[in-house]
Length: 224
Image 1 (spheres, rainbow, N blue to C red):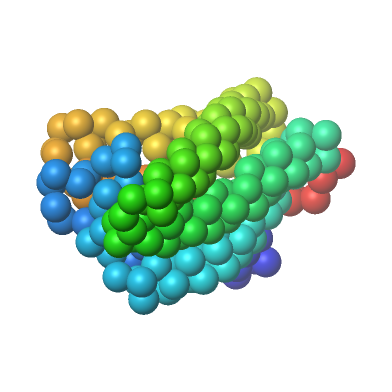
Image 2: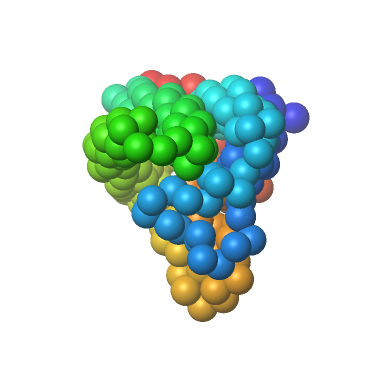
């Protein structure tokens, strides 16, 4: 087994752990709280779950960068100027994803504290939650733009340059994998309980598994 595949397997296992962390932190079977913009679903999540989801998620998301290195090696035959930018951009966005995950855990603690407060204290918490959400929206925009950039970069390199992947694999990029899960959530509403909190890590898991499966061993993985 090549070193590239080993990195891919590590990234896949980390993505699987990150999915578990997403569900520990945010899974809620209450339909009234599904995707609630006031983050009321955290009221049904214990503090222990928040702590576990926080630490497991941050560590697992960062380890997923190993999977991105595996993909970078698969793109290496196209040359360093095409493979390395993919790794730098996607690695940065994944690291920022760990920040986003940690932010969700802290927001959960604030929401739980706000629910137990009254009067002026409750108003202070309302303002704090509003500030938290404004930071969260900014992070979402940056993460989505980054996801679009490195997904398109991967797709274009696989389509137009020599890589270790068959050209049809350009369609199995993280952005389209995420959109696929979004479509599944529309068609099968019950899946939203899992897809809403864990969609992006599910997309990375599918991305890593497919690139491992179809990476050609007889293609040079050394960048020119």
